[in-house]
Image 1 (cartoon, rainbow over the protein chains, first blue to last red):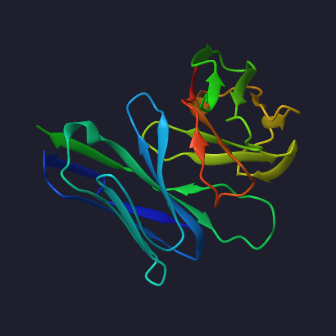
Image 2 (image 1 turned 30 degrees about the vertical axis):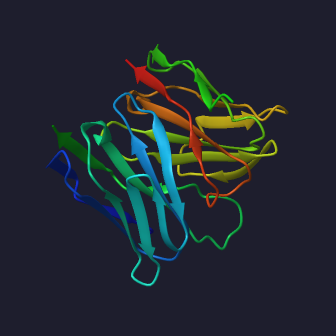
Image 3 (image 1 turned 120 degrees about the vertical axis):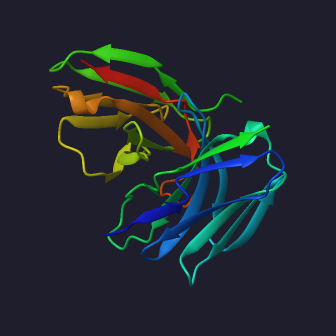
Length: 113
Length: 114
């Protein structure tokens, strides 16, 4: 079964701390997405990765294809970073067509002032 | 440019009724995917459409159907609603079909079935 596991499920930290959220998956992928979801439901795409590392502002995403693992880092965290961070994976699919993204359960991040 | 839009924002229906949810993708995007997110869970894939054709379907019953129009907007239809259909329904658009392209999500439609 193709699975996506995230850790931790919940994370509370103080403003300014360095945050790491982890994602592991079971089989080969074509791409991995990091998404942010705020209360009320709207989802924002942060990164899409198939290899290496990407950086946008205070956010950094890395992926290790051999280890089937990705991390999302937030530097100098701020209360406005409080949200649910979701890892979603496009598993390699040999049957043609599309099978959608497979999502992790998300990491609830709270940054306290 | 406008992002992905969905309507309605919220909806309350009774068991057994039918519902239609609508999605307008970002201009120039030809692929639309639908996801169901039950409270406390990650989204689950329902359908993907590209150029008005179904490209993929998740593990959902035949009560769920969808279509894509010539302007690339899409409708998700759910018949014979069950209490378990209560969820946030998300639409995502991308330039091409497949999930290895950046996905842009709409704000979702929150459906409550009573």
